[in-house]
Length: 413
Image: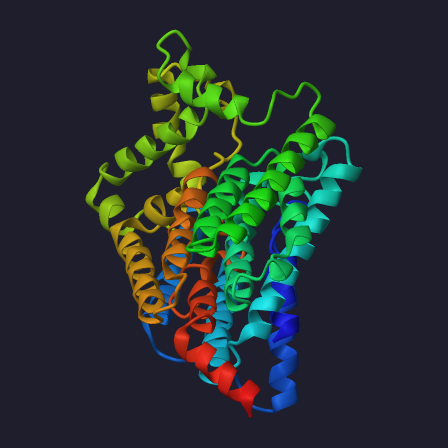
Protein backbone atom coordinates (compact mmCIF):
# COMPACT_ATOMS: atom_id res chain seq x y z
CA UNK A 1 0.00 0.00 0.00
CA UNK A 2 2.81 2.44 0.92
CA UNK A 3 4.49 2.03 -2.48
CA UNK A 4 1.20 2.58 -4.28
CA UNK A 5 0.38 5.75 -2.29
CA UNK A 6 3.92 7.08 -2.72
CA UNK A 7 3.77 6.69 -6.51
CA UNK A 8 0.21 8.01 -6.68
CA UNK A 9 1.00 11.24 -4.82
CA UNK A 10 4.71 12.06 -5.19
CA UNK A 11 4.93 11.33 -8.93
CA UNK A 12 1.52 12.81 -9.84
CA UNK A 13 3.10 16.08 -11.03
CA UNK A 14 6.20 14.70 -12.73
CA UNK A 15 6.61 14.76 -16.49
CA UNK A 16 9.01 13.34 -19.08
CA UNK A 17 9.69 15.91 -21.84
CA UNK A 18 6.31 17.48 -21.15
CA UNK A 19 4.33 14.23 -20.92
CA UNK A 20 2.76 13.46 -17.50
CA UNK A 21 3.33 9.72 -17.76
CA UNK A 22 5.55 8.99 -14.74
CA UNK A 23 2.78 7.95 -12.35
CA UNK A 24 1.07 5.78 -14.98
CA UNK A 25 4.29 3.93 -15.85
CA UNK A 26 5.23 3.30 -12.22
CA UNK A 27 1.71 2.28 -11.13
CA UNK A 28 1.45 -0.15 -14.05
CA UNK A 29 4.79 -1.68 -12.99
CA UNK A 30 3.45 -1.92 -9.42
CA UNK A 31 0.32 -3.76 -10.57
CA UNK A 32 2.39 -6.09 -12.75
CA UNK A 33 4.64 -7.00 -9.81
CA UNK A 34 1.82 -7.66 -7.33
CA UNK A 35 -0.06 -9.68 -9.96
CA UNK A 36 2.99 -11.87 -10.58
CA UNK A 37 3.73 -12.12 -6.85
CA UNK A 38 0.15 -13.10 -5.97
CA UNK A 39 -0.12 -15.37 -9.03
CA UNK A 40 -3.66 -14.23 -9.68
CA UNK A 41 -5.14 -11.49 -11.89
CA UNK A 42 -6.46 -8.26 -10.44
CA UNK A 43 -10.19 -8.45 -9.77
CA UNK A 44 -12.52 -6.14 -11.67
CA UNK A 45 -15.73 -5.02 -10.01
CA UNK A 46 -18.58 -4.07 -12.33
CA UNK A 47 -19.89 -0.68 -11.23
CA UNK A 48 -20.59 2.79 -12.62
CA UNK A 49 -16.90 3.69 -12.51
CA UNK A 50 -16.16 0.78 -14.85
CA UNK A 51 -19.00 1.90 -17.15
CA UNK A 52 -17.50 5.40 -17.16
CA UNK A 53 -14.07 4.00 -18.06
CA UNK A 54 -15.60 2.05 -20.95
CA UNK A 55 -17.42 5.18 -22.13
CA UNK A 56 -14.18 7.17 -22.15
CA UNK A 57 -12.41 4.37 -24.02
CA UNK A 58 -15.03 4.65 -26.76
CA UNK A 59 -14.51 8.43 -26.76
CA UNK A 60 -10.75 7.91 -27.07
CA UNK A 61 -11.31 5.97 -30.31
CA UNK A 62 -13.51 8.86 -31.53
CA UNK A 63 -10.76 11.32 -30.61
CA UNK A 64 -8.16 9.19 -32.36
CA UNK A 65 -10.26 9.32 -35.53
CA UNK A 66 -10.95 13.08 -35.30
CA UNK A 67 -7.31 13.96 -34.65
CA UNK A 68 -5.82 11.21 -36.87
CA UNK A 69 -3.30 10.72 -34.09
CA UNK A 70 -2.38 7.19 -32.99
CA UNK A 71 -0.55 8.58 -29.96
CA UNK A 72 -4.00 8.68 -28.39
CA UNK A 73 -3.35 5.02 -27.55
CA UNK A 74 -1.67 6.36 -24.42
CA UNK A 75 -5.04 7.46 -23.07
CA UNK A 76 -6.37 3.91 -23.44
CA UNK A 77 -3.51 2.75 -21.25
CA UNK A 78 -4.05 5.67 -18.84
CA UNK A 79 -7.73 4.97 -18.17
CA UNK A 80 -7.18 1.23 -17.84
CA UNK A 81 -4.65 2.02 -15.08
CA UNK A 82 -7.12 4.49 -13.53
CA UNK A 83 -9.69 1.68 -13.45
CA UNK A 84 -7.28 -0.77 -11.82
CA UNK A 85 -6.16 1.90 -9.33
CA UNK A 86 -9.75 2.55 -8.29
CA UNK A 87 -10.37 -1.18 -7.85
CA UNK A 88 -7.18 -1.52 -5.80
CA UNK A 89 -8.18 1.43 -3.64
CA UNK A 90 -11.60 -0.06 -3.00
CA UNK A 91 -9.86 -3.31 -2.06
CA UNK A 92 -7.88 -1.46 0.63
CA UNK A 93 -11.17 -0.36 2.18
CA UNK A 94 -12.75 -3.83 1.97
CA UNK A 95 -9.69 -5.37 3.66
CA UNK A 96 -9.91 -2.81 6.49
CA UNK A 97 -6.56 -1.21 5.67
CA UNK A 98 -7.92 2.34 5.88
CA UNK A 99 -6.66 3.47 9.28
CA UNK A 100 -4.56 6.12 10.96
CA UNK A 101 -1.39 4.83 9.27
CA UNK A 102 -3.16 5.38 5.97
CA UNK A 103 -3.74 9.04 6.88
CA UNK A 104 -0.14 9.45 8.06
CA UNK A 105 1.22 8.00 4.82
CA UNK A 106 -0.89 10.30 2.65
CA UNK A 107 0.15 13.36 4.67
CA UNK A 108 3.84 12.46 4.64
CA UNK A 109 3.90 11.71 0.90
CA UNK A 110 2.02 14.94 0.16
CA UNK A 111 4.65 16.88 2.14
CA UNK A 112 7.41 15.10 0.17
CA UNK A 113 5.66 16.13 -3.05
CA UNK A 114 5.60 19.81 -2.05
CA UNK A 115 9.15 19.64 -0.71
CA UNK A 116 10.40 18.46 -4.11
CA UNK A 117 8.22 20.94 -5.98
CA UNK A 118 9.26 23.80 -3.72
CA UNK A 119 12.97 22.94 -4.04
CA UNK A 120 12.62 23.02 -7.84
CA UNK A 121 11.39 26.60 -7.60
CA UNK A 122 14.13 27.45 -5.13
CA UNK A 123 17.01 25.90 -7.08
CA UNK A 124 15.92 26.84 -10.61
CA UNK A 125 15.53 30.57 -11.18
CA UNK A 126 12.83 30.50 -13.86
CA UNK A 127 9.88 28.14 -13.20
CA UNK A 128 9.09 28.11 -16.92
CA UNK A 129 12.35 26.20 -17.43
CA UNK A 130 10.82 23.05 -15.96
CA UNK A 131 7.04 23.55 -15.70
CA UNK A 132 5.49 21.78 -18.62
CA UNK A 133 8.74 19.88 -19.14
CA UNK A 134 9.55 17.88 -16.01
CA UNK A 135 6.63 19.07 -13.84
CA UNK A 136 3.05 20.07 -14.59
CA UNK A 137 2.10 23.74 -14.48
CA UNK A 138 1.42 25.29 -11.09
CA UNK A 139 -2.34 25.53 -11.65
CA UNK A 140 -2.66 21.75 -11.76
CA UNK A 141 0.33 20.90 -9.55
CA UNK A 142 -1.42 22.09 -6.40
CA UNK A 143 -4.19 19.51 -6.69
CA UNK A 144 -2.24 17.58 -4.02
CA UNK A 145 -3.40 20.11 -1.41
CA UNK A 146 -6.67 18.15 -1.22
CA UNK A 147 -5.18 14.91 0.17
CA UNK A 148 -2.68 16.97 2.19
CA UNK A 149 -5.33 18.89 4.13
CA UNK A 150 -7.79 15.98 4.44
CA UNK A 151 -5.12 13.70 5.90
CA UNK A 152 -3.90 16.51 8.19
CA UNK A 153 -7.44 16.94 9.49
CA UNK A 154 -7.53 13.24 10.37
CA UNK A 155 -4.21 13.36 12.21
CA UNK A 156 -5.01 16.54 14.14
CA UNK A 157 -8.60 15.66 14.97
CA UNK A 158 -7.84 12.08 16.04
CA UNK A 159 -5.20 13.42 18.43
CA UNK A 160 -7.90 15.39 20.22
CA UNK A 161 -6.58 18.57 18.61
CA UNK A 162 -3.28 18.17 20.39
CA UNK A 163 -0.97 20.94 19.20
CA UNK A 164 1.94 18.49 19.27
CA UNK A 165 0.23 16.76 16.32
CA UNK A 166 -0.41 19.94 14.35
CA UNK A 167 2.42 19.07 11.92
CA UNK A 168 3.39 22.72 11.55
CA UNK A 169 6.62 21.97 9.68
CA UNK A 170 4.78 20.02 6.98
CA UNK A 171 2.21 22.80 6.53
CA UNK A 172 4.95 25.44 6.30
CA UNK A 173 6.71 23.39 3.60
CA UNK A 174 3.48 23.48 1.61
CA UNK A 175 3.00 27.22 2.24
CA UNK A 176 6.52 27.99 1.03
CA UNK A 177 5.95 25.91 -2.12
CA UNK A 178 2.66 27.75 -2.76
CA UNK A 179 4.44 31.09 -2.29
CA UNK A 180 7.38 30.20 -4.54
CA UNK A 181 5.04 29.11 -7.34
CA UNK A 182 2.55 31.95 -6.70
CA UNK A 183 -0.44 29.63 -6.28
CA UNK A 184 -3.41 31.74 -5.26
CA UNK A 185 -5.65 28.70 -4.85
CA UNK A 186 -3.04 27.06 -2.65
CA UNK A 187 -2.72 30.09 -0.35
CA UNK A 188 -6.47 30.78 -0.21
CA UNK A 189 -7.40 27.19 0.64
CA UNK A 190 -4.57 27.02 3.17
CA UNK A 191 -5.86 29.94 5.23
CA UNK A 192 -9.51 28.92 4.82
CA UNK A 193 -8.54 25.50 6.17
CA UNK A 194 -6.62 27.06 9.10
CA UNK A 195 -9.61 29.23 10.02
CA UNK A 196 -11.96 26.22 9.95
CA UNK A 197 -9.47 24.21 11.99
CA UNK A 198 -9.12 26.98 14.56
CA UNK A 199 -12.87 27.12 15.16
CA UNK A 200 -13.14 23.33 15.42
CA UNK A 201 -10.15 22.99 17.76
CA UNK A 202 -10.99 25.86 20.07
CA UNK A 203 -14.70 25.41 20.82
CA UNK A 204 -15.15 25.87 24.60
CA UNK A 205 -11.35 26.05 25.01
CA UNK A 206 -9.89 29.56 25.30
CA UNK A 207 -6.34 28.30 25.83
CA UNK A 208 -6.35 26.41 22.53
CA UNK A 209 -7.85 29.43 20.78
CA UNK A 210 -4.87 31.53 21.85
CA UNK A 211 -2.38 28.84 20.81
CA UNK A 212 -4.10 28.18 17.47
CA UNK A 213 -4.20 31.91 16.79
CA UNK A 214 -0.46 31.96 17.42
CA UNK A 215 0.06 29.15 14.90
CA UNK A 216 -2.05 31.00 12.33
CA UNK A 217 0.05 34.12 12.96
CA UNK A 218 3.24 32.08 12.43
CA UNK A 219 1.87 30.80 9.11
CA UNK A 220 0.91 34.32 7.99
CA UNK A 221 4.35 35.64 8.98
CA UNK A 222 6.03 32.79 7.06
CA UNK A 223 3.92 33.59 3.99
CA UNK A 224 4.80 37.30 4.19
CA UNK A 225 8.52 36.61 4.62
CA UNK A 226 8.57 34.06 1.82
CA UNK A 227 7.00 36.60 -0.55
CA UNK A 228 9.74 39.13 0.24
CA UNK A 229 12.42 36.49 -0.16
CA UNK A 230 11.27 34.97 -3.46
CA UNK A 231 9.45 37.84 -5.26
CA UNK A 232 11.33 40.58 -7.05
CA UNK A 233 8.88 43.36 -6.22
CA UNK A 234 6.68 42.00 -3.43
CA UNK A 235 3.74 43.85 -1.94
CA UNK A 236 2.57 43.25 1.59
CA UNK A 237 0.87 39.88 2.08
CA UNK A 238 -2.79 40.20 1.18
CA UNK A 239 -2.52 43.54 -0.66
CA UNK A 240 -2.37 42.05 -4.15
CA UNK A 241 -5.33 39.80 -3.36
CA UNK A 242 -7.41 42.74 -2.11
CA UNK A 243 -6.46 44.80 -5.17
CA UNK A 244 -7.50 41.92 -7.43
CA UNK A 245 -10.99 41.88 -5.91
CA UNK A 246 -11.26 45.66 -6.21
CA UNK A 247 -10.25 45.56 -9.87
CA UNK A 248 -13.13 43.19 -10.61
CA UNK A 249 -15.54 46.01 -9.73
CA UNK A 250 -13.48 48.83 -11.20
CA UNK A 251 -14.86 49.88 -14.60
CA UNK A 252 -11.67 51.83 -15.34
CA UNK A 253 -9.53 48.68 -15.28
CA UNK A 254 -9.36 47.13 -18.73
CA UNK A 255 -10.51 43.58 -19.19
CA UNK A 256 -6.94 42.49 -19.95
CA UNK A 257 -5.98 43.73 -16.48
CA UNK A 258 -8.58 41.59 -14.73
CA UNK A 259 -7.40 38.21 -13.56
CA UNK A 260 -8.77 34.94 -14.90
CA UNK A 261 -11.04 36.56 -17.50
CA UNK A 262 -9.54 34.21 -20.09
CA UNK A 263 -10.71 31.18 -18.13
CA UNK A 264 -14.23 32.59 -17.88
CA UNK A 265 -14.24 33.19 -21.64
CA UNK A 266 -13.20 29.56 -22.16
CA UNK A 267 -16.20 28.42 -20.12
CA UNK A 268 -18.40 30.49 -22.45
CA UNK A 269 -16.69 28.83 -25.44
CA UNK A 270 -17.36 25.39 -23.98
CA UNK A 271 -21.04 26.27 -23.56
CA UNK A 272 -21.34 27.55 -27.13
CA UNK A 273 -19.59 24.51 -28.56
CA UNK A 274 -21.88 22.24 -26.55
CA UNK A 275 -24.94 23.85 -28.13
CA UNK A 276 -23.51 23.92 -31.64
CA UNK A 277 -25.00 20.54 -32.59
CA UNK A 278 -26.99 17.65 -31.05
CA UNK A 279 -23.95 15.36 -31.28
CA UNK A 280 -21.80 17.88 -29.42
CA UNK A 281 -24.51 18.28 -26.82
CA UNK A 282 -24.90 14.57 -26.09
CA UNK A 283 -21.50 13.04 -26.86
CA UNK A 284 -19.06 15.92 -27.24
CA UNK A 285 -16.33 15.69 -29.88
CA UNK A 286 -14.23 12.84 -28.47
CA UNK A 287 -11.59 12.64 -25.78
CA UNK A 288 -8.74 15.17 -25.99
CA UNK A 289 -10.19 16.84 -29.10
CA UNK A 290 -11.22 20.11 -27.45
CA UNK A 291 -7.63 21.37 -27.87
CA UNK A 292 -8.52 21.80 -31.57
CA UNK A 293 -12.33 21.70 -31.83
CA UNK A 294 -12.81 24.39 -29.16
CA UNK A 295 -10.31 26.74 -30.78
CA UNK A 296 -12.66 28.52 -33.27
CA UNK A 297 -15.12 29.34 -30.48
CA UNK A 298 -12.30 30.58 -28.26
CA UNK A 299 -10.88 32.88 -30.96
CA UNK A 300 -14.29 34.39 -31.66
CA UNK A 301 -15.07 35.00 -27.99
CA UNK A 302 -11.67 36.43 -27.18
CA UNK A 303 -12.09 38.93 -30.02
CA UNK A 304 -15.53 39.86 -28.72
CA UNK A 305 -14.26 40.50 -25.19
CA UNK A 306 -11.16 42.35 -26.32
CA UNK A 307 -8.62 39.70 -25.36
CA UNK A 308 -5.53 38.95 -27.41
CA UNK A 309 -5.76 36.17 -30.00
CA UNK A 310 -2.31 36.34 -31.59
CA UNK A 311 -1.12 33.28 -29.66
CA UNK A 312 -4.04 31.28 -31.13
CA UNK A 313 -3.35 32.17 -34.74
CA UNK A 314 -0.73 29.47 -35.27
CA UNK A 315 -1.38 25.76 -35.60
CA UNK A 316 -0.58 24.93 -31.99
CA UNK A 317 -3.30 23.22 -29.92
CA UNK A 318 -5.33 25.32 -27.51
CA UNK A 319 -4.41 25.14 -23.82
CA UNK A 320 -7.67 23.97 -22.26
CA UNK A 321 -8.98 23.44 -18.74
CA UNK A 322 -10.33 20.19 -17.30
CA UNK A 323 -13.89 21.44 -17.70
CA UNK A 324 -13.34 21.29 -21.45
CA UNK A 325 -12.24 17.65 -21.20
CA UNK A 326 -15.35 16.83 -19.19
CA UNK A 327 -17.99 18.71 -21.18
CA UNK A 328 -16.53 19.53 -24.59
CA UNK A 329 -14.93 16.11 -25.11
CA UNK A 330 -17.52 13.87 -23.41
CA UNK A 331 -20.77 15.83 -23.78
CA UNK A 332 -23.70 15.84 -21.39
CA UNK A 333 -23.29 12.10 -20.81
CA UNK A 334 -19.76 12.63 -19.51
CA UNK A 335 -20.90 15.56 -17.35
CA UNK A 336 -23.68 13.42 -15.82
CA UNK A 337 -21.14 10.72 -14.97
CA UNK A 338 -18.91 13.26 -13.19
CA UNK A 339 -21.82 14.88 -11.33
CA UNK A 340 -23.02 11.44 -10.21
CA UNK A 341 -19.56 10.56 -8.91
CA UNK A 342 -19.40 13.77 -6.89
CA UNK A 343 -22.90 13.14 -5.51
CA UNK A 344 -22.03 9.52 -4.64
CA UNK A 345 -18.73 10.49 -2.99
CA UNK A 346 -20.47 13.26 -1.02
CA UNK A 347 -23.10 10.76 0.12
CA UNK A 348 -20.42 8.28 1.22
CA UNK A 349 -18.60 11.02 3.15
CA UNK A 350 -21.81 12.11 4.86
CA UNK A 351 -22.64 8.52 5.86
CA UNK A 352 -19.34 8.20 7.74
CA UNK A 353 -20.70 10.61 10.39
CA UNK A 354 -17.18 11.92 10.77
CA UNK A 355 -16.87 15.08 12.86
CA UNK A 356 -14.95 16.71 10.04
CA UNK A 357 -17.23 15.59 7.23
CA UNK A 358 -18.16 19.16 6.26
CA UNK A 359 -14.48 19.95 5.69
CA UNK A 360 -14.09 16.75 3.67
CA UNK A 361 -17.08 17.82 1.55
CA UNK A 362 -15.56 21.28 1.01
CA UNK A 363 -12.33 19.73 -0.26
CA UNK A 364 -14.25 17.26 -2.42
CA UNK A 365 -15.99 20.19 -4.13
CA UNK A 366 -12.71 22.11 -4.40
CA UNK A 367 -11.85 19.74 -7.25
CA UNK A 368 -14.07 21.98 -9.39
CA UNK A 369 -11.72 24.91 -8.75
CA UNK A 370 -8.95 22.95 -10.45
CA UNK A 371 -11.32 21.88 -13.23
CA UNK A 372 -11.88 25.61 -13.88
CA UNK A 373 -8.27 26.83 -13.83
CA UNK A 374 -6.11 23.99 -15.16
CA UNK A 375 -5.98 20.79 -17.15
CA UNK A 376 -5.61 18.76 -13.97
CA UNK A 377 -7.10 15.45 -15.13
CA UNK A 378 -3.79 14.08 -16.41
CA UNK A 379 -2.86 12.10 -13.29
CA UNK A 380 -4.35 8.99 -11.69
CA UNK A 381 -4.64 10.96 -8.46
CA UNK A 382 -6.96 13.53 -10.06
CA UNK A 383 -9.63 10.87 -10.67
CA UNK A 384 -9.25 9.09 -7.33
CA UNK A 385 -9.97 12.40 -5.58
CA UNK A 386 -13.60 12.50 -6.73
CA UNK A 387 -14.52 8.92 -7.66
CA UNK A 388 -16.67 7.02 -5.13
CA UNK A 389 -14.59 4.97 -2.67
CA UNK A 390 -11.65 7.20 -3.57
CA UNK A 391 -9.07 8.98 -1.44
CA UNK A 392 -11.29 11.61 0.21
CA UNK A 393 -13.97 9.05 1.01
CA UNK A 394 -11.31 6.73 2.45
CA UNK A 395 -9.92 9.51 4.66
CA UNK A 396 -13.43 10.36 5.87
CA UNK A 397 -13.99 6.68 6.71
CA UNK A 398 -10.70 6.57 8.60
CA UNK A 399 -12.02 9.49 10.65
CA UNK A 400 -15.49 8.03 11.26
CA UNK A 401 -16.73 7.27 14.82
CA UNK A 402 -16.77 3.52 14.10
CA UNK A 403 -13.12 3.58 13.02
CA UNK A 404 -12.17 5.57 16.11
CA UNK A 405 -14.05 3.06 18.30
CA UNK A 406 -12.17 0.15 16.73
CA UNK A 407 -8.86 1.93 17.33
CA UNK A 408 -9.72 2.57 21.00
CA UNK A 409 -10.79 -1.05 21.54
CA UNK A 410 -7.63 -2.34 19.89
CA UNK A 411 -5.53 -0.02 22.05
CA UNK A 412 -7.31 -1.20 25.25
CA UNK A 413 -6.79 -4.86 24.34
